[in-house]
Figure 1 (cartoon, one colour):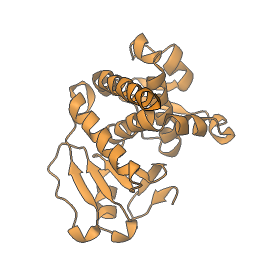
Figure 2: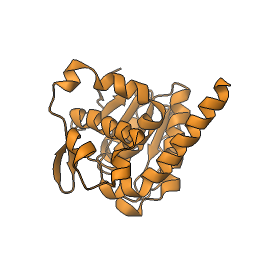
Figure 3: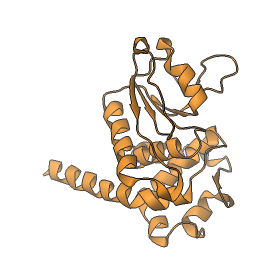
Amino acid sequence: MQGRIRAADGVRGLFEVFSGLFVGDRRSARAVMENPAAGLAASICVHEEPENPPDPKSGTEFYHIPLRDGMRCDPAAFLETVEIVAFHRALGHRTLVYCNAGCSRSPSVLAAYMGLYQGHAVKAMMARPIVRSIPAKFAFFHGWLSSDDLCEEDDLFPVEFRQDPLFQQCADAFRLMVLRDPDVYMNPGLWFSVFPAIRERGRVLHLTEQAQQI
C-alpha cells in the first residue's frame, strides 16, 4: 500500500515514508491504531505526554519512548527508537512512528533509520526524475533552505555534519518526506543533539558488515 492510510473522515491520515513505514501526528495515529484493518504490527509514540496503548484487539505492538524536541533530545533514547524501527522493518512489519504534530521528532527517527539502514534505497528514490524535477525545500525554524544550501552553504549545522555522507543521506530522507508533507522539517537543535550518536551507530554497522564479509 502506498501513500496515506485514511482512518476516518476528518482525519488527516498517515503518509508512507518508505514501503511499510508510516509517520503521522497523534490524532491520526490514534485513529489508525484502533483499526485492525490498518494492519500495523508496531506503533511507536515519541511525544512526551502520557499515552495509553491501543486496544489489544488492534493487533499492534505499542511502544512509548518520550523524546524531547530540540537540543534536549536524549541521543540514547532516540537511537533506541531507531533500533526498534529497524527490528520491526527487518521482520517486514508495517510500522508507525508518531509524535504530537508528526513534523519534527517522528520524521527525524525515520530519517535516521533510512540513513542508517536504507541508504541505497534513499539514493535510488532521489535519482528518480519525478523527484529531481520538484524544487524540494527543507523547512527550518530559520526559514526555507534548498537541499543544495543544506550541504554547501547552510550554517545551521556544523561543517563536519554537512560533509558527512550519512548526514546527507538522512537529509535526503527528509527531502523525500517534505515532498509528501510540507509540514515536515529538520530541526537543527534536535539533529545537533542526536547526530553524533547516529554517526557512531553507522560506524559500528559498517564495521559489522565488513567483518561479515571476511
